[in-house]
Image (cartoon, one colour):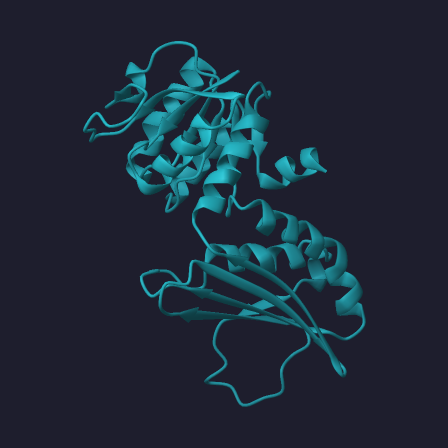
Length: 256
């Protein structure tokens, strides 16, 4: 049985994860951490990570950037693995994440979806074959009208997965806007486009456009629950792991 602490338990993702954990016979929600609590959870909730009882095996974090520093310090103190899902971390915090991973196991990924991370693995393998045969590469992402950033971090991560397959001198340039240009499309660029509208949870297409044919790798998210399931899979993977910086590709590799 793996004892889980949910850091940010009363947020939307924290509540979804709590429900998934409650239905998994191999997991137990030991405690939650949240500044605000109305007592509705089936497990004890504390306002500070330092207050949780002994016996935790892993922390899942879906909180806010200001809370991450204290969480990382606590995990080092208690030698506790952490699945870090909070976004919007500063450069200084990202540096701290890397430093902490030298002392405890930390799993951080641009996207917690198993499907997206499997797609990244596929792209690394097949992008060079298509590129060497003259296929142009474009990434199109679609999200709801409340999303603040564009393009999405996942779109960049997908483009990075393509680029990871090429040597330094052969990497592609990312282009986000062609409105000021009147020239033929360069071969070594990846166009990244963002669509915002409605309630689209997340839709990503990596398009390889060749002579007389198009190959498209697609992923569609219908609910944010898929990110919660990915985080739970990551927690199962990370519990008991030695110090290091892991990501969802490591989870994928273990599953396959």
